[in-house]
Image 1 (tube, each protein chain N blue to C red):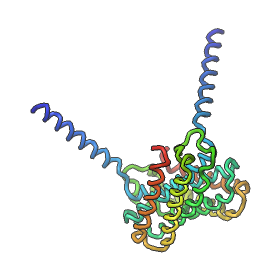
Image 2 (image 1 turned 135 degrees about the horizontal axis):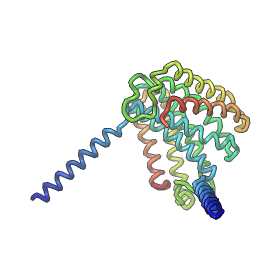
Image 3 (image 1 turned 90 degrees about the vertical axis):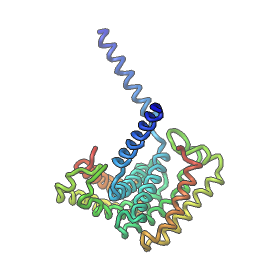
Length: 148
Length: 148
């Protein structure tokens, strides 16, 4: 019996540890949401880069990506509500500590995404300057407000 | 001098190894492109899941995601051209070995994404059945045609 109890105890501890670990790893829904939105922006941007640099020749696809990015950029406004820096997140406290600077950085991205979307019917090559300007706003915001 | 030569040799070997490693890691542009498209679909889907399960309350955002997924689903048609299974890729040979099955799996996804997009103006909760049906087509295709 003592062996049984010993094993049972160990299994319980293991189960509890797993529970604690998964609780610690669970992200807040708002964090899951914003990471999904950011992943979508990242995927569109990465795909678009292949078109704009001419490495992949599906010119007609570019429109899907620039319109997608522009639509998603508008959602960024509400991805960082007060209190959404809890748990596992790559968002830096600076977002809530310097709200004016952060708002400016988000607006720069939204403006650049809207400018790029104006060229939705242009050739990928023609989109290069507006695309470069937009990517700069991504980097600018990530540098100051996202964990490395 | 022998120490110098030894170090120089080691540095050259290290540099060469880095070169080889980065050459081995470089993905084909078409693979980068399709991974960007898939990442965008994944991001939209993951974000949408938070809305549909009611964990995050930005109902108006759902439209952006369902339209985004539907637009991206059409691009999947040309993401797997002949010869695009070279280098680092998660695509399985089955894609090119069983083209009819693969085409069927892609079309099931496109159809499900189009059905979901028909509800673009519905509430996220109302989208649940069509969303579930679409996610099933993702899983179905990944099970058979994507590396684990």
